[in-house]
Image (cartoon, rainbow, N blue to C red; front, side):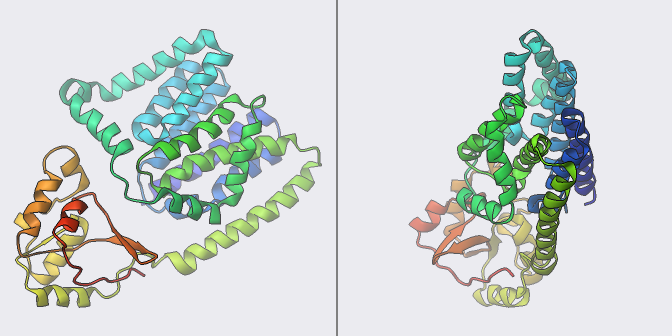
Length: 363
């Protein structure tokens, strides 16, 4: 659980170093790095290891090599970035376009770096499991069925990290100062809209772009370094205090299910033959209620359906014909209830007019 935070701190240090080398302004570099550190996304999502901070760390190294004109190494690390998290594809595209425009003769080196890294890491998979690799990495990761409302994610992001949004918008005017950041600031929001499914944590790449933009813009400021430091440092301090206070006071118990015993009692009262739903939920309630999972399957996950081991529609049709309770999670806004569709075909539930036995809110 500490690796995400450690990688995040390493990214902050690399941001400072990159901006210092680029702007020759230690104040602007420090404030750009602290912009990343103080963001709500960073504070909230570094509590666990999901791979996104590993990918952003690779991105930072790739960009550092790009600035040093070591394009072979830049290509190697941008490939590692995308292989770690396919969602960061627009970052790789942005660096490639930048090299084609500004250093066309070195494009081949960049491509070779990416190919070398890809082959070294992926050769066993390509040789022995190419269809599964394509399915898991691109189909599942980029175009799977939506589980979150992207507009809700965007509004939530803007409510806490409006400063980041401001700097990303400001990056649209950095074409001369930093072509890669300019292209990233345009491509990344477009890919955000294009992706069928998207998680809040992946907005870390937006934070990285905004932090780079902040450092570059602050270095251009005509005011004295001390003025920049004081004014923006005060702003960041207020943002960090607000975000940190919110995390400590309201989010440490978020998504906490309080009335577990009540749910177990209701399940027992209904006397089902089995329980069905995501294993992360069902296995616990199965143990507590002494009612087995459907077909005694303890690994009902999205991956099982996506790679073809299980058929979601077929399983749902079988479930609704039996005395089975679906234990599920979802969301409810404006009186409309939305269930997660990763392991259940919701169309089958609607067609068979399945009734809701009980709803319990998360804290």
